[in-house]
Image (spheres, one colour):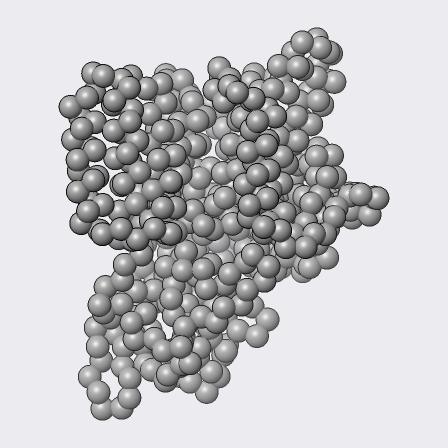
Length: 510
């Protein structure tokens, strides 16, 4: 049987999604092919070669059929009632997200239930999710059922380089925007239709954000909220720019790195509290799931949470952890529910960074073990290997989407990632201990301010070095694909078979 069946299934499923987005075949024909190849795979399960071929084809057509099915909209979807230029409407629905407060307006998502166009007409039953832009200071919370009056229109295509705003919203299954002016009324029905657990976590997040705003300076508060709570919209531009130029902007987005640091801290805390081994890992899994919801369920957090749950569950049931299979499983789960995410920048960068470490770090670690260096120097070179692997894997995508290359990123990550650990540890200590003993908040806040200031000073200094970064013109996708083909050819040549044990496996041994 196949050693890593999930990897093959995931790759074929992804190829099917790509094919479904650019090639139009008869849907019934595609479904018939899916059924035929699936049955063929069942009947040839004892013949390895044929089984792999038919399994691959069935997974390909599964992805091909799934993409248009997920993209198809019901007849009463709000998108079908949304004009391009906009129309005055009244909409009834409930809030499905927190309110993001931007410079001039608040922004949140609404699950629509009823739509009224014009006076005297009965409201129509509709479905779908819209984005609401609210230009008045009204208190709105997750789960509230509202009646809103405003202008409904399709999103404008604010394209910047390779970023497509319409596609960005489409990936989130949002096809319409409701703009509510200051003089428009917001009515509350008094009902709350949100998930109770999600509502509690959002209230907790809001309370933590308020405490951060109270004791930290505005700039430091915006950065801490981005790193711990996933609120990136208040990060200062100068700080964001310094990180972009040094290739370390990933520390602002809650991702696998942040999740891993938090899991480590939680496991150490539970161990100190002498919690039994299996219970310790079960509690950590619950914490990971709740933290994923708390931070807004971003794709990078979902991916890292799935991988973390699989990893922790392996300890509970005494099973080996396979990085390739867990990465494939997390990709499959995300793409099954949101196939459009395959075209999202965050999804691509998140998986590319982890996959590149898995594929390329093994090469560096092999050379490292041959050198037989002393432990401190070995750890330093290992850190460079990890940083260089991640940089290589994301270089093409960063150049394509953001038109920048940052060679200094390999060195910058060696200084800034350890400081990120200190920032997260200080932030968690501030939030948890500060809640219990408020008198300690000012001291703990100063600790956070110090490490954030240190990160900025290092990033700002490194970004000013000659050749630290290069701004590019818009490059073609063909060049990006060529880069990754060349990268695999250089590292693996004719043999594309991965090493025994991934780079991550070798890394955890150090």
